Length: 408
Ligand code: ZN
Image 1 (cartoon, rainbow, N blue to C red):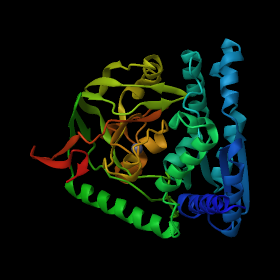
Image 2 (spheres, rainbow, N blue to C red; image 1 turned 90 degrees about the horizontal axis):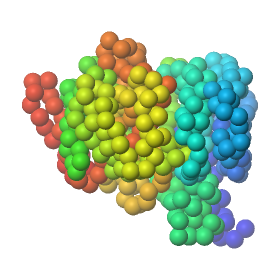
Image 3 (cartoon, helix red, strand yellow; image 1 turned 90 degrees about the vertical axis):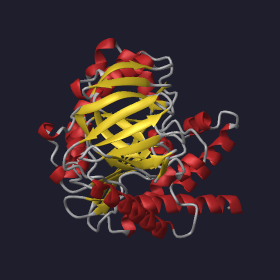
């Protein structure tokens, strides 16, 4: 191996180690399920090595190829898009109920569905979300430990670095991934423990404030997001109901909370494009009344966005609000990743759809407290270096939380 190859192999191995030890935190005697694109096999072999060293009893990998989804949308008969192969979801759900952990490896082509039939995509997304409800309940409630890690897929790299040739683009994206996932230095495990502690400290400060609402102000944005009573800010590591500490998103820079499903008012403009279901949705602009989106537009992908928020009643309401400093390492890279795992950690954001149990008092998602429910949960970015955020206290007084994208 050349020196460059050796350096790459060492960093890839550290990413695998972080995924296993910090991300899902595999326990002795536990099964690990991995969902990954077929191109990620080298990373997955590293994951398996670290998982077996940690005592895993099995590493079961579901390899997939996203191009197959495009082939289905282009070639399939129109009646097939309300179907999802339930047996595959049932198998994973059974393994999770028996105590397995799950690792999702993400490396998507943001242009996968360019020009494809958006109605078919929306129906396919919904059918899969319905089939995944059981899995979703287990992961969303942290009954099991799970995590998501990135993989520098060639099609993704070409979208992030359109001016570079394929190989150079993939290397550049890996460099960006290693920096963002804190795996470019020697002590990656130690770095993650420090980082998780800092995020936890931020959630403690915000939890002490008991804000009734957050008020976002910036170009094209004047948005009041009411928070549910008894809300819990979360960020970084999470304890599963079995008491295992996992870290669901790698990278992660956000602290997030639960909006009240009926108490969001005003208008907001997205500050980055949203890559969703293989389509790129740009310049989203929406208006909220009584918690519901009453008006939505986008300069491209508008139909995909409108289909998304029409999925069900809760899809046009918020399930998450998150604060991310504009000076986060991912944001400082200046890159647009066209991938929510990265872009949501470069900017404050909101998510339409399902609320997260971790933000509810006692973890219970109840409509009475203002928790939103939906088949979908999709984050999109509204923060920037021009965004101010105020916290509204229960007496109505207002204090600065962020100024020009930085925590006060
Ligand atoms: Zn988020």
